[in-house]
Image 1 (tube, helix red, strand yellow):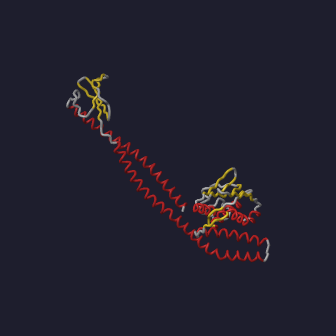
Image 2 (tube, one colour):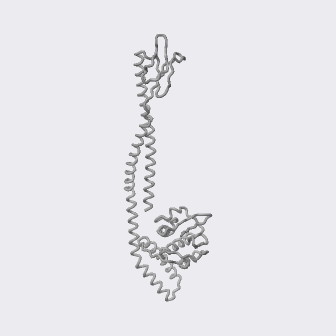
Image 3 (cartoon, one colour):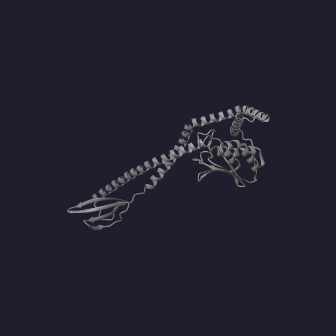
Length: 345
């Protein structure tokens, strides 16, 4: 389920980014502290070595072991050595003379070693944290997954229960039509039955995946579905403007009807003006005046753009699923106050 995957990815991404942020702060403080300690230890070693050299009075010869010694007599340089590595200032008093000594020592660079260890431990820690976070997120999302499963089971059960009553209603409507009944109340019952049948077909699609792919003329099927919605179109005082071409396509007829019915039904339900329908070799489009605020979200299961309207929020989800099965491109765009929904073959 995309909703669950999206929540899982969002949780893991947020969790890992925050962990990386805190680990980076910890690494910086730890690295700064450990380098300070190393520097102080190295300076202590140099001072101890200077003290030993001082006791042996060897500053004036070249036996400085691994120390680089620079000696100043006031501002006069008595001995010059490169000042690289860790350096320590030291004062030496001989009688009435005071010398300034700068002793430097090149220590083995431990920065790379420390950085490598930190990176290694961080990677190991993040892998462990990622695994832990994944199972933690799955645990937290389990109640949501269970509720969705219950809802899907409910839809499957209700689909099964609806089948017989809808068949009885439709058969009796046909019998009344044969008898020539034309009352307004009867027309309303017929419209409600058609709507109920459309909902039933959407619910059935979620549970039945059998397909019979045949060659169909899309224009003929589309005109048939437009006639199916004529009553609703007239009730809402809408006008249909069509640009249709004959297009032959291999597709399951029920899938094609679901595409047409869902897109036409949405346009009729939400349109604030004329509805434009286009059909050619490239694809099928329905355009109407209006706006969809979240085009990417409305194709998800149980998401409705307008909560005040009826429905389960399954129409565009079903269209998107059918398009994915056949490799069609499903696109929803808002432009200049118009919503355009297209299926490109």
